[in-house]
Image (cartoon, rainbow, N blue to C red; front, side):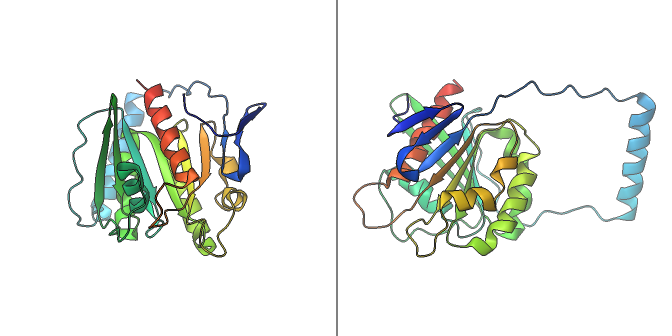
Length: 242
């Protein structure tokens, strides 16, 4: 059981004291069954698609190193966010247990595995540059949790982050979502309430939603409470899927 510090329960909401984080739990209903296509309808769609392929050149994703192979199914935590949000620094904190200095930003794909006692978690981070974002959607189906990292000191980027996040979530209406409002230590950083509103998290649908303020200051001897809370919640979610 995760040790939620100072957690209080109010209805369907768990709140971690001090404004560090809060969890919204919404009832998850059954997914609606898709209607079977008729043979003629499928044929028409195929003909239309073929016509479109003749009119337009095939879409090509940007050249980038091949993603690492994740062997263990069902324990992949997908880590996404805009370039410079701090995804790699957070992964290093979770892997080493302490803040790291001079972390090189991920330019393509970054796979990190954590093995402790009977726990095994695979993280897959995909870079946030515009040319890498077409790959994000491809890995949504393999994730048990989406961790979306936001630079809370760059409010001008919230509209872009909001658009990309909601496009991702549309492909899986029940995937648990953890939003990390990172860089809380910087001057002018938005609060988690402002991040919640800026990303329109009220509209993410029926899913588990976590919003946590984090910072990864190098030189500290211990992880910040938000970074530790995020790690503990991820472990809890992975264990729930066993």
